[in-house]
Image 1 (tube, helix red, strand yellow):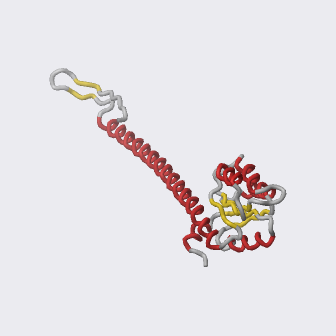
Image 2 (cartoon, rainbow, N blue to C red; image 1 turned 90 degrees about the vertical axis):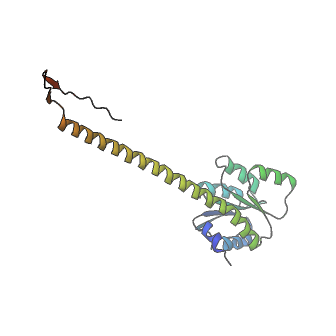
Length: 196
């Protein structure tokens, strides 16, 4: 059964699944398809790198041991141009050397093979929740920037209107008018208007 909260985090995302075993790839694809907007597939690390650069997925689910290029080598290539995309790494056994390098390359979660649905969903929940929160925060920042820009435009317009009103009032009341003084002539008003 699909967790509705997980689905709310994943439905707008794209995932790349990299798995060399056709049966395993089909099973994983079947697990991912109901959750994600787009599911892309690759059968080895080299294909995974190509698909990643072509499709720009939000998340990668990859096997560790594959022919042509393994999961670590694939991730090393991807990290040359992209440091952020989360990666779930599936493995039957993880040697200390692979573990350290995988952590250094920014693997988000490790999944034991054979893959269980509940373990995959827990890992996806943790990773996609972070992606969701980052997107919400980015949208909030964008809205704040738009609001500040709108406010600045509004205040500029209000200032221009206030200055125009002041000029109009001053022009109608005093400019180029001769004000008489009872004893000694009068004053010719010449105004210099400066905005506040």
